[in-house]
Length: 120
Length: 155
Length: 185
Image (cartoon, rainbow over the protein chains, first blue to last red):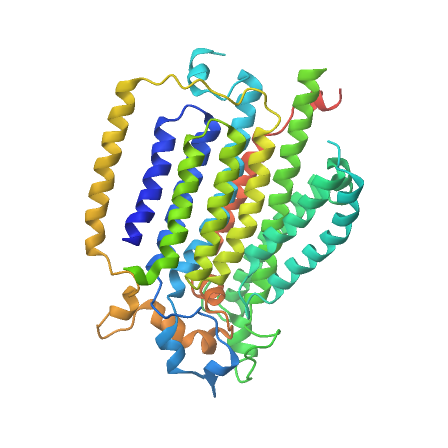
């Protein structure tokens, strides 16, 4: 059920990209899709009653990790993937917004139908 | 681009130092507590963005110009690749080999200390430098672009 | 199902915020609603026991808000006339409903929420996550297992990420560059 809610968020972002005519709204749709994917990946690694995958002094005894940590820790691998994905989404947002700003300077509007008509 | 009122300027001149310190803390302790290079770099960029929003773009540009930011960005990327290539020379094994941990700290019990975990703090520093400098540079160029277009349309 | 009520609350908050951001006509309200959705996502990450991700999401959210407001606040013509073709809209909505229903079918094959794959796995060799959790402190010396994954076990992914970030920033810088003769005026 929670996975279906994540997918619903993704479909909302996809609707915004397909249907809207304002360029900045299309960029917001892409941002919504990125949020949905990140939340979905973290939800895949969650374990009921789990703890964060960070060792404290009480979890280690003579260089060996205790069993209680291994049995209650959440999955660290999706968290590593999502960490880089969040920073990449900031870089692509900067690129998309710089394109929008340039197009506004040349055509005077954010509307994508107007941009098709004014050639050059 | 103009700055803000005198209250905002006074408060932000105190707060930006704390934000900078927090970013450095998150980066340096990235192998012990949550955080790491990415979050620390973005927090460092946020402190300079606060300077730019409160005092105006010219003051931020005097503090850290666009050219210096792009040089720091490239330096961070080169440091990251340099740390990775050292794995070839010292371990003989592969790219990104954690040579400091496997060879020099091998027998010692250095868990939970600041100087531990081999090449991981160096990589954290490189990533922090890279991410912070590049994000600040792009915000500087975005606000420089905006001020030039509004001057043209109004003037 | 009601045992995960806090996750449901946050997900419904994010969905409502993004629906408002998609449908409102004022661009500034849309940007602020997206920011609220991102902040709700960060709280959700905190409840899903991922503190690294929560810190990163909050500060990236703040910078994204500054970038988006820079782009929209000084532009006069942000209202766009919404004269949409009815047939195109209906076809889009039908296709999206089909995608949604097909996607929900795919979730039956995935592991149930709360029991990730590395717990249910019952084979002879351990999964990658079990290896990282057991040997993380000994092989890398870092107490934060996520840091040891991104900077030691999977450092190639971090190199790829640094390259992608570098390329996108260089691309944005090239697009926003003014010609030199305008700078000297």
